[in-house]
Structure formats: C-alpha cells, structure tokens
Length: 450
Image (cartoon, rainbow, N blue to C red; front, top):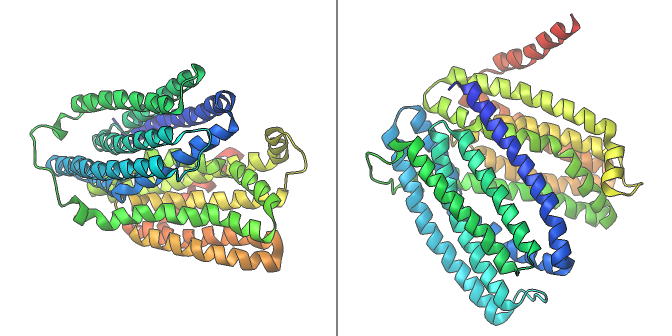
C-alpha cells in the first residue's frame, strides 16, 4: 500500500471520527438535560473531570513509545518494535495499578467526607462513578497501546477506525441507558462494557494483522521509562501550554472587559477554531508516515510530506477561513439564536490566530513524530505564559484590538521557532522549503488562470 493511499484511508477514518464526535454531542447532550436535568448533569460533568487528570498518569510515555515503535518498524527492526510494544504494555499494567489505587482512595474520600458536595448524585453513587472512571482510564492505556500496534504495522486507518467505532457504540449504549431511565453509574458502566468488548476485538484483530508483534516472543523493554522520559514529559507540557493558550485568555478578558466579553469571545473562538479541527484530522493521518520515513532514513520522503502538508494546510485553512469570515454573522445569529453578539474584528482576528496555529502545527508534527519535540514544548509553555501577561497589558492600553494582536503575535513567534527546527530535523533548507511550498501555489494559480 502506497503512502498516499494510507494517508487517504487515515483521513477518511479521521473524518468519520469527527462525525462521531459531533453526532455524539448532538445526541447525548439533549438526553442528559431531558432525563437528568441541568443540575444532575452538571454534577455528572464535575465528577467526570477527575479522570482528565488521571489520563496523564503515564507521563506521556505511551505517546513517545508509539513514535519509537513506528520508527523501529520503519527501519525493519521488528524485534526492537516488539520490545517497545511489550514494554509499553508492561508500563500500562504498572500505571494502571497506581491509577486504581488513586481511584479507590478518591472514592473512599468521597464516600466518607462528602467532599464533592453533590445534591442530585449521592455520595455512594459518586464513589462508584469515580471507581468506574478510573477503570475507564486504565482501559484507555491498553487500547491506546494496541492502537499503536496498528500504526506501526502500516494500519493506522484501521486503528483510528476501531477507536471511532468504539466511541460511536459507546454513545449509542449511553443513549439507550439514559432513555431507559437508569442511574449515572449504569450509564458509566454501559460505556465501559462497550469499550472493553471492542478493545478485546481490537487486540484479537491486531494479532492477525501484525503477528510479528507477538511471535517470536521477545523480552519487554523495561528501560522504556528511563529512555523515553524526556520526550514523554514534553508531551505533558502541551496540555500546560494549551491551558495558557485557551483558558488564561478568558481570565484576562473577564478581568479587563467583564463576563459578557468572555461569553462572546468564547463563542466566536469556537467558530474560528473550525480550521484547527479540520487540520487536526490531517495531522493525525500524516504523523505515522513521518515517523516511518524518519525511522527508515528516508529524508526525501520526510521533506516531501512536510512540504505537501504545509500546502494542504494552507489551502484548507485559507478556504475555510474565507467562508467563515464571509458568513460569520449569519452563523453566529443562527447558532446562538440571538443578534448583537457578532463582532467582525474579533472573529477575523481569531481566524488569523487559528491560521498561524494550524500552519506551525504541521511543522510541529515533524518534531513530535520523531520524539524531538522537548525544546518546542518548552517554548510553547514559555511563549504562551508570556503571552498571557502581554495580553493583559495590551488590553489595558489598546483595548480588545491589543488583546487580539497579542494572540496573533504568540502564534507568529511559535511559527518562527518551530519551522527552523522542523527543517533541521528533515535536513531541509529554508530556500528549498519556500521554493517548494510557495512555488506550488504559483504553479496552481498559473494553471487556474489559463
């Protein structure tokens, strides 16, 4: 199967995943409100945030191990790939023990101290939910590692598809349980059972498509933590940077302009980030191909993937952003069912922010795909934290315009930092890169003009 064919299949699987995500939100949110009410649903959301912190319990080593598996498989080192795979499974089992101990401790604390102070979900129910959510986190460690197995053997689309099918059936199971009027713990248990069953099917399928990951049986690499700790911690840095990039601006807006500005900004940013959601699907498709190219030493292919990813991203972002900018007011009025909330300057400024973020995000994939993203992650945290402070100062002296300009500046700085790093990894030059990327635009324009 060609590289292009694998990318197309992964794109299709990712597009299906976007459909599942949107469809699940459309299906489940009204059901939660209908059968539980806003108050009980709010308490459910409060309890469900706890697993978000437990997911990082492996310190990002799972993601780093996945990259290494792909690179080793690309280089033909099946023994090394299997040792990393078994090492990741071994790590999952150790981390899962820790997660379950934390879940049990949190459940016990909730049961005896009523620390969550929920009124519509009893302490007993809350304790059971925390325990079940902990089981779900542990299961996600193993299914994520199994999905890496599909990726390293060239079946990335299959792994993505199975994961999205699992989310689809999980949403349907939850909808049925809600419709039947069962309690929150039954809702959680239904989703967990679906994930467990499909995870089992996923494991059986991996054995059939990649038998070399299991036979002959090699020893697990128990040095995986020590060897991959640097790129692993770098993966953890991204959620921290995202907090500065996505949550801190809301605090600045609230402090300077008030809560109404926060609501308007948040709604407009949701629309402006549509191009990012689209490019994330593309990045997930191109990621394993970059890892494989680097692992096999094919720098020509790696450069080609980088160049074409930039071209596709720029075309996608430009076309989508123009459409959103043109129909922005209509979209906002129809979506929010209320006029007077549209702000042209904020929306267009946020589209520029999303555009630069999407573009440098392509180059960041070159770094993350080969576990060379530690320096970039450090810059991401530092620049976004500095950007929060700058946005506060800009807002005071220049108003909302200064706030938006600061957000744009942060993304431009990241692009100027990340692109040279990606060019160095792929043994590329800025002249060759610009000639390839922007030359393609010129040729396409000339062809269209004729």
